[in-house]
Image (cartoon, rainbow over all chains, first blue to last red):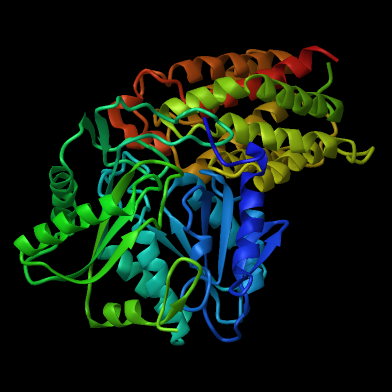
Length: 333
Length: 212
């Protein structure tokens, strides 16, 4: 294992210190307990957005703290949910009296820790609502699983709900927008290589040189099947079909197409993927009206990518276009 | 052997030791069907409990000791295990509140409340390939041992033995909760790491009742 680290047990605190040094114009960082808050928080009268989860998915979530998006991000240890204490501290720090929305990816640990923190915040008189993101179509949603995972679609939920909060929506409305984004967003990913969690020191799974995992989760959890590597276009077709069929997206729909790198895949390959995905959507009569390409929800150094498609309407388009100023997404301001 | 606060403290120290000793085993089990952090997280949690034991008041009850474990695990473990074990110890403490010494019925009440706490938080049922598959047979065996007239140490031994068998019995199961549920049939053949750690903790409770 070769990594640019000093001590596997200090990975998160050193990275957060670096984030503070680099982006002190946008955020303030609490080191004990660890959370990243918007520089001008709390904003009186604005609904505050708090997200978080295990580290290793950067820029998610800290890179999305700032104007028009999150008020605070709570990074846990690598691939492990933060505990309720820092979530509660962040919630209290950014509450501006209009309530706090927790945006939680659907993993058992994240859900349980955020639920506990929300209970404690409610007991302290802070109005908290929670939206669970579960956009990954690779996992069957049934009574017999923990349900679909929250993956790259989380960025879209955070951006659009953040814009709704910025324009002055109340807590119930911001929660409703976030829920609506989740309900029209579908994702699926593919891994070419595994990743190594620093304190584990070994890959969390193995893939032969010529194998890829279709439907990979952002912690390297397996997906639908393991197959031999194929040309990029064939892989795109293989994961785009279940995404489109699931909602389902239909001819005449207007969508946002998001090609997300998992950390170890170069941009040049992401654009090869984007090219085919856009073409395949056009073949179905689906119009791509907004786009996002890059490494936004990663899985350490994993090679691979995910495709996310969100059905747009006028309001969602407006909120997507609204100004945002964070370390990882910035436009209009 | 009386099951008093000294027993609870011995149980907690033994738990920390056994989790540390089995850290790699738990990581490996979790890597097979989860995300590989269970041993690391639990070891961090119990290591954080140890220094706090020295601060327990002289008149602390067994419930006070268990409550200390609960709050520490909730604030240090993370993942799913933090809230699940935290709730288990919190409910266990609630079931024996105010008692300076625990008789057999109190032990059964403690174990039952812990199991109910895990079920309340995680919403898992027996057979879902989770911690519940160790705790439920442990509670049943403890209740049976109590009605057969076993002493406190015997009740805890019966619970630990049943938990160990329950953990082994998760191997052929498909998981219905947690990250392992994403694997479908690929989880078959792997022991659930949470059930295994539960069995280790219950064995520590029994061991703490036989040595002083």
